[in-house]
Length: 152
Image (tube, rainbow, N blue to C red; front, side, top):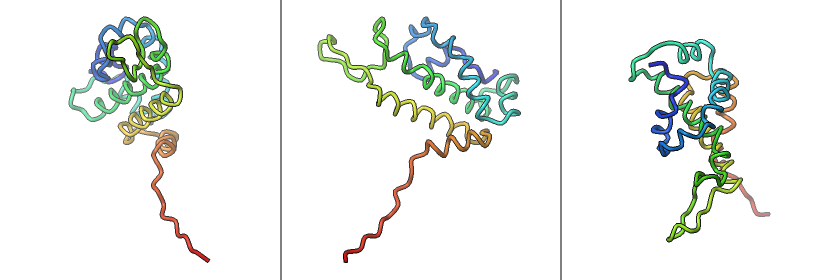
């Protein structure tokens, strides 16, 4: 199996999204963006290997790139999936009678996207180039530092 790009049906299964979302052309349109994003973040030899070579299903590189691709695809498309169109969207809450639904807000989408990108880069960490490692370090949460306070 060639790791990337991941087929839409397989991507939906990995992300636990409804199969009907495969009919939405957004994933096909964003495939090139996601592939380019991965290409700019990983070392070229790993990208070539992941996009061209057939690998066994248990290969760590295959698993890393497949999941990284899926997380980056959701990162790239989640704003558009959140639009209130044809019942799709990233639903935060549903009313008891399902008459009221609440989609993610802009700040929640930004936090969700940052988390998706962090997960993707963490999975791909062994294959990242210096730019990818820098981006991973930017996204990692900062450790709290102890502060010494003195009273005068």
